Image (cartoon, rainbow, N blue to C red; front, side, top):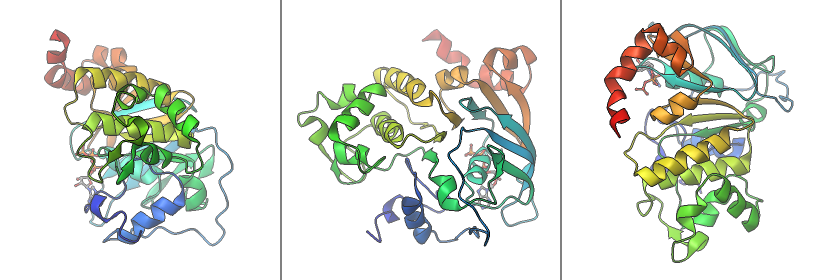
Length: 296
Ligand code: ATP
């Protein structure tokens, strides 16, 4: 299992698919070429069960160089609120979610969860309460059932099917010749990008974290899968705080709040209608990238 993660790790892609609990993360860290210098403080304490309030207070961050990547990020997100992060490439969206899961230490300012500074709690207790889903869902060789169970290893078959129904993954799994016992390959080539993401939703529902981080797949997705993803995601988000690097318009529109990030700053925030009214950066993005969708 030492090499288990190697195929899915690229430089700059430090975690993948849904990951909760430290065992998985530790395995990933073992494969990292550059290990971020993040360890528990000697007096770190266990983060109690959280509700999911997330606060960033004047957060500054740079990776290695002098260049500030985040330049004073400030926000409070209420438990259960969904946040879509949008903005140009290199704006700092992924960096914000990397800091929240403490893959790097913040240089200045602080991030808190339910009032606990994330730098003061154990990494294990922090990450155990977060679900992370990256763009390219990790599929390993085995059955679809096994792949979904990965979200919570002691889940029963019934719980797995129940979760899959809830997030609309069941609709594509059930018609397969071997259903949940269909064998899939590590690269997941037998599954479309959308289907892989539906599997990651079922995993996430089983894991049941209070905070969910999603980097939405950008690949083109057929209309039926797109609808399933939309319904599945809405189900998954219920009762959780979520940060979504959003690429699909439906996700952005459904978010409670959109943060428009550029140059390491939240330049605009509000819901879809509010941001359109502003006629600022989000308005421009929307009209340059999304208006053609309205014709469909
Ligand atoms: P995208 O939409 O392309 O994913 P983003 O908004 O998520 O972009 P980030 O990935 O947060 O942007 O990157 C912000 C800046 O930090 C970029 O200039 C990027 O080159 C830099 N950066 C990101 N990751 C690292 C890293 N591991 N080491 C050094 N610099 C990095």
